Structures are given as structure tokens and as C-alpha cells.
Image (cartoon, rainbow, N blue to C red; front, side, top):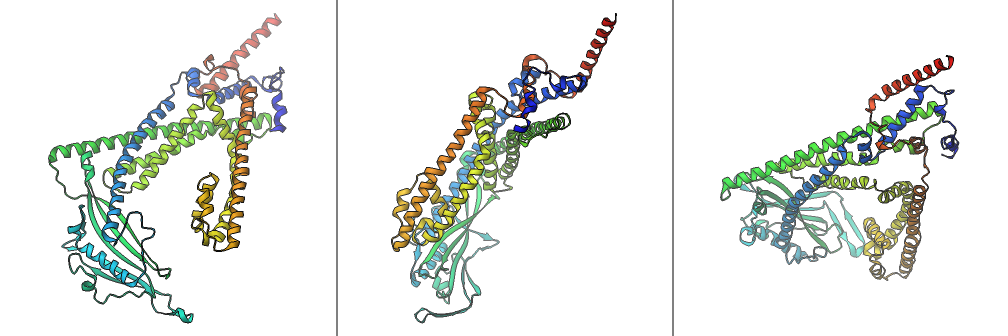
Length: 569
């Protein structure tokens, strides 16, 4: 930008501008330049200034305020509904653990395992017995899945190597790595014992990889009735896994369930007519509200896209003017000024909200049951909408300096994060390989990254140092050097440099605002126009600028011709 500063030094002097010199340009070109300057200056005005300039109502601002309010209400409503679903899933998962896992205690899933062969048979037998007597022991409304006239059976599947001869005492083994699966089925309420149901059932512990017990249970979420909503019917696919892949003598036991939500086929509620009317009305109002939000977002999307297109058109016009008139290329920093990032953010939020609202309508109509996907779209859309509020706070001078600092420091911050990220990754890999066998927080790359990030923020320092096993003196000494160097490097140096980048940018922006000197060629170009928003110079349709220029040119030609006749006379 320094090589082009001489060009704009001319604009700040009392000398005539190049486009005002009749020896260089015609009157039409002067008017076109002034027209372009006013259009660009009008584009960068805030809604209040645009209202004073052309009397146009700030429809985008009003629409964004309305959209923020309604989208927030929609998100809260969906969050409360989703909360009931999540609570029902979690409580059923906890119920299944207490029903089907022998001697299970809350919070003991990480250490829940079996160590003897008899214990494995006892746990499988316990699951089958509990499953067979489910109606007599559960306090919930659980039932077996039924297909036609028959109940869906419980399945016990064993995965094991095809052949294997293992002699640890002689340090010899022979094994076929091909995995085979053997499954048995147990029907509920019939032969509810492992010995009675599967008398020839045998586990090949030396070759066994895992045993999976799978069954399906059904339930109804009745808590939505008091909220005037139809209850949903749930299908829980319960999977209990005995994991022996490590062959370490410890078989881990885990229980998980997959949930499928369906619309109940038949229902009866006391006062069914009133309940049906209220339920139908609630669904109708909710869908109508979601449709209104979709229409609002589509309108906002259209207005913001129009503004983006106008900005691109102005950018092309300004670039063409600079190349043809000044022989200079417009830097990318000036070109990107015309692409309003806040409009891009609002467009992204509108698209996400529209998709999320459509999914919400499908969920409300029981067509879809994917709450997670819908919550992601609505959550990110709402986050972007509220982030866009910062754009309007930037119209105030004290808040604007914060936004300008973040925008100016962003490129340097990204470069700094890339450099610091390389060092961070090197520490993650080193800690994972060296300290992984001796510290539980360094067992996987994910846990290593989480541990180191906590150390950067000053969390969990003492337990990280203390929990290091001292089996190897060399590794213990290395761990101290590793941890002390990481904490010193990232807390005392890298974070300090990061803060310095932000503060230096803040001081630079503050000095620029105090001096009032244009900071770019685009700003210098606009600073020539001294017309205030309420001066009346902007009260023209954007497509009538060329006509106004022509009218002004004719008037000036007439005045020039009249002066010439007067002088001759």
C-alpha cells in the first residue's frame, strides 16, 4: 500500500483532483466518479444513516430483531422437548444396567468386569433369567417386542478364532485368525435358564473374542401427556458385550442401547376429545410457528443476498475505475471490504435455521426422530444469529473498536495458532508414546490433547504430576522435564505472545481512530465526499444515477455556453 500513497497524497492537498481537471476528464466522468463515491459511501452507512440519507426504513434491522426473538423461542421450545426425550433415554439406560447386570452399582461401569469362567456363565444366566421374568420385576412399562403372534427372541452370539492351540508355559501357540460367530436364541417366558435353554452352550475362553447378548424391549414415554402432546413409543435394542479381545484375564462388561422412536399406533386418553383437540391445536400452532420462522429466514436470506450482490457490483465498479482511471490494482484488503462478513454469517444462519425448522416439523409430525441432527442445525443457526447482533453494536464507537480489533488481529492470530499448533502437536505425540504406558491421561491422543489443553488453562496440574507412575526412573524424570517445559513454554511464552498480538492491534486501531486518517485507499477515496447523510445528496434511486449525471452535465453545458455568449457580447 505504500507504493500507492503518493497517488492519494494529491487528494489531501488543495490542488484540484484528477477527475476535476477539465484537461483530463469530461464533465460526465466527473459526475460518474462522484456518483460512484456516493454509492460506495452509502453502502457502508449504518441503518440509521441510510434512513437519514434516503428515507428508507431499516427493514433488515427490524427483520433481524424479530428473527432473533422467534428463533430463540423456537430453540427453547425444542430444547425442552428434547430434554424430555434425553431424560427418558438416560433413565432407561440406567434401568437396564440395574436389571440385567449382576451386582451393578451406579458409576461403576468403568470397573465392571468378570475374572472367572464361572462368573461369565453366571452373568449370562442372570441376564436370561431377568429377561424371562421382566414383567414381574420391572417397575416401568417395558414389554417384549412382538412380531405377529411371536415374541422376538434374545440372542447370544460368541465371536472366537476358528482354531487355536495356546501354551503360554512353553511359549508356543498355533492359531487360525479367521473369526467365526456362533449364535443361540432364547424366547422370553420359555425356559428362562441358561442350562435349560442351552444345555450344550460352551464358551471357548482361549479363543473367545467377545460375547454379545442382544434383545429388544419396548416402552412408552408418558411424561408428554401432561404437556398436551401425544406420547411416543420407543424401541430399545439392548446390547450387552463381554469384551475379551485383550485376553488379559479381565473380561470387560458393557451395556448400551440403540433407540428408535415411533408414533404409537393406537391410543386412548380420558377426555379423549378434549385431549385430541388440544393436541391437534398444539401441533398446528407449533407447525405454523415453524413455518413463520422459515418464511422470515427466507426473507432475511433474500435481503442479505441482495446486499451481498450489491456489494460485489460496487466492488467491480470501483476496481474498474481504479484500473482505467488511476492505473492501479485494488488490493484484496479493499476488495474484501465490499464483502460484508456479517451478511455471510446471517445467510449461513438462515440456511441452518430453515433446514432445522423443516426437520423440527418432521419430528413434530412423527415422520423423523433424529433429534441430534435437528438440534445441531437449530443450535448453530441460533448461535450465528446471536453472533450477528455484534454487527449492530459495532455502530457505536466504543463497541466498534473491539470489533475492529478482532477483525484486524484475525489474520495474525491464525498464523500464530498454526505455529503454536505445530509445537502443541509435537508435545501430544511425544507424551502419547513415552508417557502413555505410565499415565492414564496419556493413553490416547485424544486424552493427551485434553490433558495438555487443561494444563494450558491452569487446570488439573497437581493430579497430572502426582498420578505419574514411578516404575521407571528414566520415564519419571522425563515426565518432569516434559511437563515443566510444556507449562513454561505455553503459559509464560506462547500465551503472552498471543495477548501481545491482540493488544498491539488494539493500540493500532485506537490510534487510527484518534487521528482520523484514512487507513486504506478505499477509505481515502470515500473521504473526498463530504456530504452528510441528511444533506439530501443521497435521495436518489440507485438506478437513476446515470440520468442525474446526464442532467447535471447538460446544466453545466448550458451555464458554460451562457457565460461564453455574455463574454462575447
